[in-house]
Image (cartoon, rainbow, N blue to C red):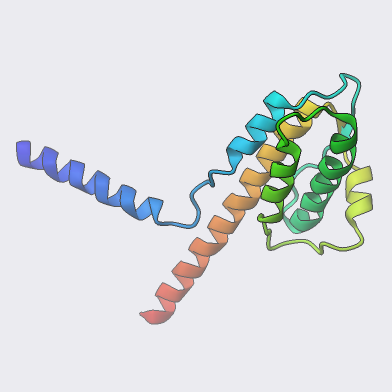
Length: 151
């Protein structure tokens, strides 16, 4: 019985090592959004275009988010710890595979619901999780296809 327990622990440890070596693990950058939400002070009546995630328009949605943060949030909010700049930098490193990333940004933004700053940041977190999980699914599908081809 003791051996089975040790084997189970080793299986757990080794499978955990495999998972942490994957590129699909959430990044450490998520703390920046938490800090933005907690430390940046915006007027209570500030409203921001808040897109929802749509797989085929991920680049456009990300550009909309960057536009709102780099424009309205930067101009209207107090940011003593420069969290806005950190979020902008983090968002530049997110590269979704879908969407045009071109002229549809204005219609994507202006057609989006208008929400408070806190709701906006919460939505951004959800969108980034979906973009990252979509990339993980795509990577896993590619691994499965290559495994099938190699057989």
